[in-house]
Length: 311
Image (cartoon, rainbow, N blue to C red):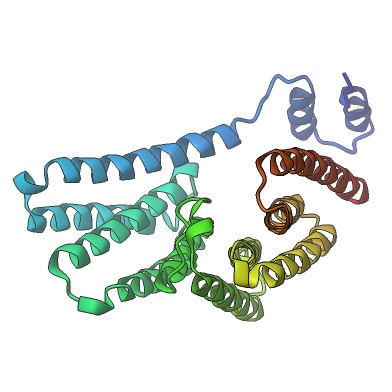
C-alpha cells in the first residue's frame, strides 16, 4: 500500500512541517485516524428524516384525538424552537448537527403550513400559492444561515408551485407535456437566480446547488417531452443537447455528477425513441435495452475516467 509517511518524516526533519501537522498527517497515513464525517452526515440526515416522518405518522394516527389547533400549535412551536436554537448558535462554533436542525425546522414549517392550508383552506382555489410562500420563507432562512440544505427546499417548493411533480422517477412517464414547459421555466428561473446570487454575493457557496437543480429540472423537461408521441423527437434532441452541455460543464468545473446526468438522461431519451421505432416488440425491445444499458455503463465509465485524468 502506498504511504507518504517517509516523505512526511523528511519534511518534518527539514523543518518544512511543524510537529503537530506532521503528527496529524502521519496518523492519517497510518490509518490511526479515520474520518467518519460522511457517515455522521448521513446518520444526521437520516435522523431528521425519521423525525419528520414520525411526526407525520403520529399526526395521521391521532388526528381526531389531538385536534387541528393543537397540531398546528405543537408543530409550529417545534419549528420555532429549532429556528431559535440555530439563531442562538449562529455566533458560536458551528457543529455538524446545526445545519440539520435548521433543515428539521424548515421541514416542520413546511408541514405546518401545508396542514393549515389543508384543514382551513385559507387560499381556496389558489392553494398552490402556499408553495410560493414556502419558497420565499426557505430562501430567506437559507440566506440568513447560509444553508444549502434549506435552499434546496426553497427550489423544491418553487418547482411545486409551478406544478412540477417529482415524487418518483416513474412520474415522468405520466406527466403531461405542460409539465415539461414548467420544468424549463423553473430551470430558467433557477439560472437567473444563480446569476443574481453570484453577482451580488461573490463569496457565495450556492452556485453548485443552483447548477445541479437547473440541470435536473431541464433534463426532467426534456425527458418528459421524449416520452410523448407528439414531442418525442424534439424531446430527445433537447435532452441530447443538454447532455452535451452537461458534459462540457463537467470537464470545465471537474464535476463528475454532471457526466452521470448526461448519460442517464440521454440514454433514457434515446431509448424512448428507439423503443417506439421498434413498436415495443418484446424480444427486440428487451435485446435493445440490454445493449443500450451496457453501452451507457461503458460510456459513463470511459467519460468519468477521462474526467479524472484531466483533473
